[in-house]
Every structure is written in C-alpha cells, then in structure tokens.
Image 1 (tube, rainbow, N blue to C red):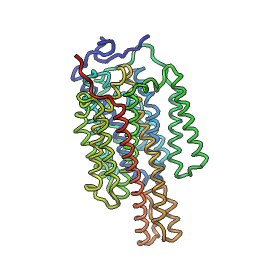
Image 2 (cartoon, rainbow, N blue to C red):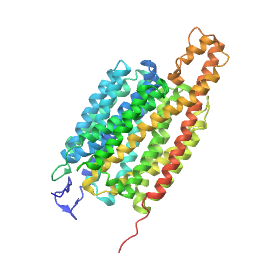
Image 3 (cartoon, rainbow, N blue to C red):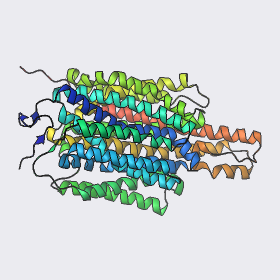
Image 4 (cartoon, rainbow, N blue to C red):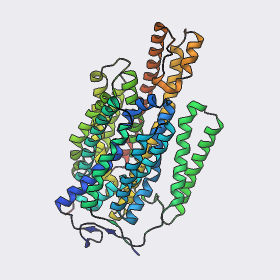
Length: 524
C-alpha cells in the first residue's frame, strides 16, 4: 500500500499529499504547542548550563561528571530522536508528543530530588528519552498543519518565540539557583509542561502517516545509542583516566564498531530509522552536515561560556543567565524575517552569511581574559553570535523540511534534530578533551615555585578546572598565586575552544555555499 500523509484539518488531500489549510486559530494553537514543547528541551539545556557551577559545587562533582550531567541527556535525546519521529508518524504525532511531555516532566522532578551526581545523571538520561519524543513532534506538527508556502514564516515564528522562552528560562533558573537551590532549575520545567499538555490535549489535532506502518528499527536505535555512548565516554573519560586506559580504548572500539554496524543495518532494513536514501538528496544531506558543524560549535562553546562567567569572571547564576539575553533577543527579532528569506531569496544566502557571522562571534568571544568586563569583553561576541544564528536557524529548518515529501515530515524532523543533538554531544565531549589539553600544562606552569605539598593539593583537583578549591591552610600569598594560575589556565583552554568553534562555523558556511539551494526561478 502506498503511504500518504493524513493532515489534521481536512481529510481531503490536495494534489495527493497536501490537505487544505487549517484555519488561522487552529494554526496559532499548533504553533503555541510546538513552541512551548520545544522550549521544554531548549530551556532545560540553557538552564542546566547556568546551574552547572552550583551543581558541581553542591554535589562535589568533577568537571567530567558535570559533562555527564549534560551528556546523559543529550546522548539519549540524540540517539532516540529518529525513533521519536518514526513513532509520531506511526502512532500519531500529537499522542507521542504528549507522551514525551509527560516523561520529561516526571524526569524533571527526579532531577530536582537527586542527592548524588549519579542519581542526577540517571534522571537526566530519562529526561533525554522524553525530549526525544516531544522535539521531533513539535516540528512535524507544524509541517502537517501549514502548507509549504507558509512554512518558512511558521518555522521563523517557531524559532523566534522558542528563543524568547529559552531566554526566560536561564533568567528564572539563575534566580532560583542563587536564591534557593540548583534543584529548582529542574523543577521549573513542571508548570511549563502542564501548560503544553493542556494546549495539545484540547487544541492540537492528530496527524499520522496512513497505510501500513513500518516496523520500528530497534536494532538501529540500540546500535546508535551504544555507538554514541562509546565515543562520548572516550572523549570525556580519556583526560581523567588516560588516553591509553583499557576502559577508554574499549569504549572507543565499541563506539566505532557500533556506529559501523548501525550504518550496515540501516542499509539492509526495509524501514530504517535513518533512511540513507534521504541523505542522497543534495540539499537534505548538505543541510544536515551544516547542522552538525554549526551546532557542534554552538553546543561545545556554550557549555564552557557559563563556567567562565561564573567561576572566572565572578558573575552570579542570575547574571550568567542574563548574559545570553542579547543572543536570544537578536534571534527573536530576526528569526521570522530570516525564515522569509528562503521564500524570497532562496536558502544559500542565509546559510552562508549566518554561519560566517556566527564564526565572527566566536572569534570575538575568544578575546576576553581574566577580570574582563561583560559589556566590552563578552557582549559584542554574544550579540554577533546571535545575529549569525538568527540568520541561519530558520532557513536551515525550512531547507530540511522542504527537501522531503510531507509524508516524511516526522522522520526528516527527527533526522535533523538528531544531527543537531549529536553535534552538541560530540562538541561538548571533544571540547572537554581540548580544554584538558590546554588547561593542565598552563596550570602546572602557573604553580611552579610553590611548595610540593601545595602543588599536589591543587593538581589532584585538576579535573574540577576553575572550580578548584584552595586549601584553607594555604597562606594568603600562595592562595592568590593558585587562584591566578587556575583562572589563567581555564581562560587559555576557553580561548582554544572558541577558536575551534569559529573554525567549525566557517566550515559550515562552506557547506552551505556548496549544497544549499539558491533562489527559485518563478514559473509561468
């Protein structure tokens, strides 16, 4: 049986695949649910980054354990996004979207109640499963509701308002961390989840892929999860355990073998979670490669930026949350306009200009040293980075969704979201290793001249990076030397990371120039 897409507002298809438009009120409700649902995942990521210094301090965690707080969530989200998109196409996009919201809310409560870093990492993994169900559903609901000629502005609106809700999250989360506890950074998800469930239950129509439903790709999901976990373990644990440690090498071998097995399985399965045929489409493959490069830069860079602001520059969690407001506000103001660029100018222009400007933003963020002013040291780079991302994000999403037929909207959304999340997972892991490579030699040089017992006390804490604590018995002069050495070492690693992010952004611009579709020629 030929599979067709069932669109929610009219059962009569137009041209075989596209139903008549939903009414304006229906579209607004769908957009609201998609924006708020996506914001659960976006807000959580930004809030947790702001809360990381408090989590590291409160749970006495190393920086590698702090990375796992981020990576356990991102890894499950990245590995299962494709399954989430397929489940939505199979069982109903609204239904799976709602299940994801519920799982995410319950896991948020578990995160808030965690008392050890191990408990928090486990709860964050469950959060990732919930996010993998709701994130692809949000974009697929938009594709199923809006006709192609309106999707550019719809995705632009989604990107803009998702950015605004993402801005409120860090501010509120930072305030709660400063005034109460880091646990409240997770509890804040619960009321937002309740609002999303109410809107989706009452106002969002169901849509699904009709016909014989393809079998779920369980082997592919398992291999993808194990493969990504192996690579992430390798990059996070290698600086702590040693690059030649048996467990580290075994994780690398397992990851590479599992990802190789994943590609083999996907080629052989009749209904793969990652249809490799989609990647043979030039614009779709190029957009996803651009996503991988640009979001690796963004995810890796923004993991270390709040640590710098709080642990080196001395900002409070609230101030660190507010520090990214210009980034979000620029995206809010320009994203809808940028989404319309695809309709007017084609995708190539924004997908080259946006990453180039983002690369300039990363380069500016590499400049501040210790004791830098936020206004002159960090604000210019943050604003320029926001401008670049605003120009790129909505056109990138539109390009991905316009590259496939409407009946493939769920899986296309899942593929692109998976690429963005895999990028963040690998970016944080690889940049963590880069930070260690820069931090440790600079720290050792900065401690030269101190007594051996003082050096040992600090060196044994090196995996805490800028959260290293000066022993109370150390004299005031030696303590000042230690604090300066730690901060200088962190800034050195931070600069390497921002330069690497700029290089990745430039590479993504090159991909956009080579693969993004240009302006469409009007037909008579």
